[in-house]
Amino acid sequence: LHPTIETQSILRTPITKINTPAISKPILIKMISRITRSSVSLRFNETCRNRAPRCVPAFTNVRDMTVLSKQSGEEYLKKNYTERMERTKRPVSPHVTIYDFPVVALSSIANRITGTALSIGIGGLCVAELISTGSAVGIMQEVSASSLAPLAKFSVAFPLSFHYGGGIRHVYWDNVPEKLTNEDVEKSSYILGAVSIVISVGAMFI
Image (cartoon, rainbow, N blue to C red):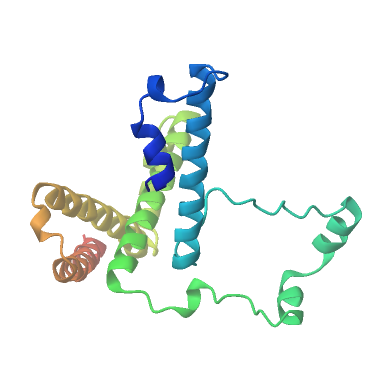
C-alpha cells in the first residue's frame, strides 16, 4: 500500500520549502501523518472490497455482540440442544462412532489404553503391598492357582507387550524419521498387534 500522488508530492517537498508561516513543523508533520494513514486506510478498504470474502478490512467497524438477558438466557439453557437443532433444521453433527477408524488410529488408542491399564494394575498392587506386606505376592499366588490364571496372564501380558512394543516403535521413528510414512506406519501397526497377541497367548501357557 502506498500513499496517493498528492501525499507523495507533499512528502517529497522539504518542510523548509513549504510556505506555512502560521503552522509549526510538529503540527505539519502530524497533518501529513494523518493524511498518509487516511490514504492507506481507504486503499486497504477498496482492496478488501474487491477481494471479498477472502480479505477482511481491519479499519471497518464491527457489530457489537448480542447480549441475552438473564431470563432469556436461562430459558434458552432449559431447552434441549437436539430439539433446538431439529426445530431450526440443523441436526446434530454425527459422532465419531459412525466413522471407520484406520488401523493406525486403533493402534494409537490401544497404546494409550494399555498404558492406563498397566498404571492402574501396578498402582493397585503397590497400594496393597503398602497396606499389608506380602499382599501383592499373595494376590498373584491366589490368581495363578485359580481357573482364571490363563485369562489373568493374558490380561497382563497383552498390555505389557503392546505398550512397550509401541514405545520401541516410537523410539525407532525418532531415530529413523524417513520410515514415518503412511504405508510403514500401517504395516507396523499390524505387526505390533500380531506380535503382542502371540506373546500374550504364549504367556497363558506358562
